[in-house]
Image 1 (tube, helix red, strand yellow):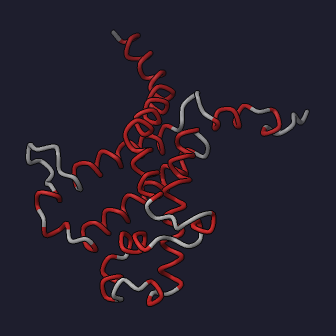
Image 2 (image 1 turned 45 degrees about the vertical axis):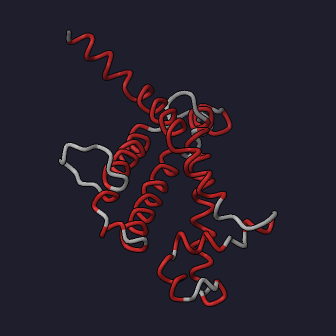
Length: 185
């Protein structure tokens, strides 16, 4: 029995990292990319000129106060919307291919935290128990608390275990150009 447990312990790092990336790709990748697409403006310039919906999603109260006139918001709002949109594309892509995975997963945890706060405070989910959900209530379908906890746990696995052997992180780590040259003593 001890031999089996030892083998499972040794395999857990590579297996968990690879499976966590697969689960992320299967469940959250398209969700984040689709969300990012709703924030892009028209054409190539849309990468720097977010849509009206982007501002409404990220700064709902500020947009309402500005009468949904983006010109009433400042440089800070623009920078947050553009950075958030790019993060929603780039961080999941890095996780998908397994490049800078730990850093990308940590960034996604921050993204999910900001997303959750925006949903709770900006969009008023705190006032809607059916959307908010509750932990330890026997109902695992709360859109905010339950789902975001699972997302964060999945991302923490990547932060702690890394991308696994089928990743660009592994290729970079094993590349001869990435290793220091041998220095005889």
